[in-house]
Length: 433
Image (tube, rainbow, N blue to C red; front, side):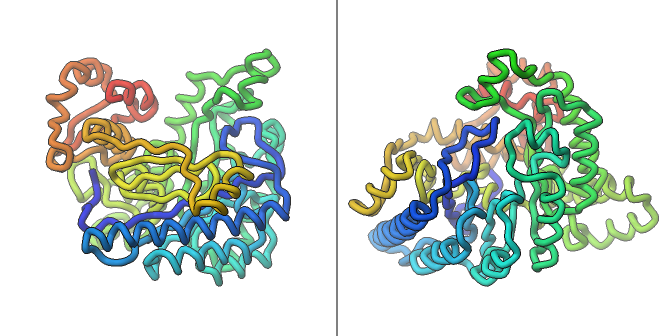
């Protein structure tokens, strides 16, 4: 638990399912782009936003609370949101502002495929209030992009980044994937070096997960491609964490890194860094900012505010086909098929396919393993106050194994993953499910 429920604000996720081509590793809810379908779909999303705005406002009024839900993040994910015409996305943002109380400084993110970017879109995005872009680079090596069925080249990714900067975007995130079949450590070093040299405000550096049902899973199962090397992937992960920290990035979550700026570092610490080498500066910068508690970093202002909602248990409302939502007590998911989603919204205002109310035990379990994804871990006292659960007592039978393997630690009243624990996080989380 790292947030104050008294001041928390909600987020809105907008799922745009359209893609030019499905990537080999992708198991997200996507469909082929058809312009007429996209127009109908966006109309349905705007209608769903309006329905939820009214419904949630009525619920708040029934509790004698303020009239509209407060929103401080909007996130366009997919799919490929950047494939849709800019004015359609602007209409979605307008619908959010009409239906929710959107913070004036809300973080509004769009995911971008470099192959779908056109300069005129950027001005429209900025005018509409989109102020953060997440670029799905995945690799700066063309042969790797081809193997992933990406529709862009490495040069297109570089041009996209530079074009975004020239247009005025000052909050950019890049996605890269490590541990690809046939990817060498030198390949990953080259990818990582180029990403760090660009100095985006945020980096999402993932280890590949081969999901059943994807093209890549089938290719590996048939022996067409080799399975990823787990030991090599572990070496890549360690390299990633060290290189990002040395370059002045805060690793605030297992796979996510936020750039430190001068505003994030106490002035006294800045003075001590004045004569450091560039490589040492990043390391000492990160250490100098650890002022919250032992092992707990002062947060970078470039953390993804929207994604933090998933890890800290703040409410978020998903709009669009297959979108997930959580209000602090219940989770629900929309109908997955695009056309069915449109039909349901047109007839009933929403498209909920399944809803599950969570008891306090289930919420506590979720909060524990989601909170452990964050480098700062879980504040044990705050967790006990929120869920009436003493974590060390409840999972006493699980902890000896995890402590002996040096996968977790307790530091200054916080339960957190060690460096080895972050690498083997899935093995840790099963102990709390």
